[in-house]
Image (tube, rainbow, N blue to C red; front, side, top):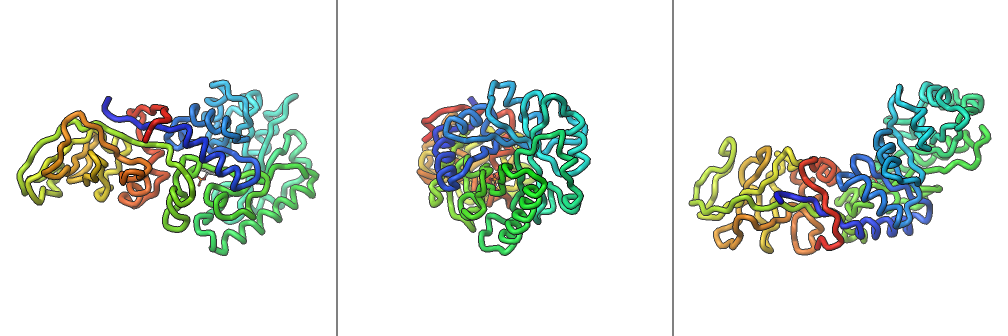
Length: 367
Ligand SMILES: *Cc1c(COP(=O)(O)O)cnc(C)c1O
């Protein structure tokens, strides 16, 4: 085997339990984007077995895949395109976010004996999805053919808990909830919090929280909220790769495309058989791998299928040895946070971009 992402489902369960306890409400487990790269179906099942009440995805296809795997828990899909097969969604009991009157009409028209279950998405200040000015035009008559089960919105700055915008969004959300109540829908599930708000803004928990990144054991923002460890979260994924080749090279040996770096001393180089086609960011110069109890930094440019690390002259590593690209740092290995920082990005992007060539392996014995 060349490379693998080992996913510890017991870590997912631990995180779901922790988040649900922290929120004190229902929990929607966000499993969009192949469960943030961890594998849609195994993660969905683990989350449900740990007490998640709902599953949340972006796309209708993702929701259909869950149903086709035999999962019968409530599912909400919130990025459903105009012209989608709404009849199929209704038939499969997939709940749909609605963010405009046009979408509401389309979904109402697809409803028949069985009504579509919808969550009204409101824009409380992020200016992405959700009703904004059209909200004032919404009337009870628009809602007769559908069943309103929820109202929700999304925070723009929940990872900066002291920002005024969080409070403004909550105020606006409460106003929009009041309007839905006025229209006669008093039992809707209200949900606003993502992972960061679930951890740091208990006043925003309402009836349900939507937890994504923290369920995978990663911090929504290590700088403002602290590390996984300090939040009590267990990172679920360890990305490992085999050293394809190890070789001794003299000082001043140029490495990789463009010869952007050369060895500073006689050393051993390790060729890792993963590259940007597998989701290793080409810009992540400051990251590296954990090899035989030590950090080995990247040297030279990351290629499509491989990159080179400087193992140091004294290294005992040999071809075929496994290295950890990122893990939970319990031994000092690099983390998804480190790779995020090294590529001017965030842990979310690191885990979701691991390519399809990397098999996901499920084991409770990652570490
Ligand atoms: C992705 C997403 C979430 C989860 O966000 P995290 O920061 O990963 O917890 C919650 N709600 C919506 C609408 C999302 O798109």
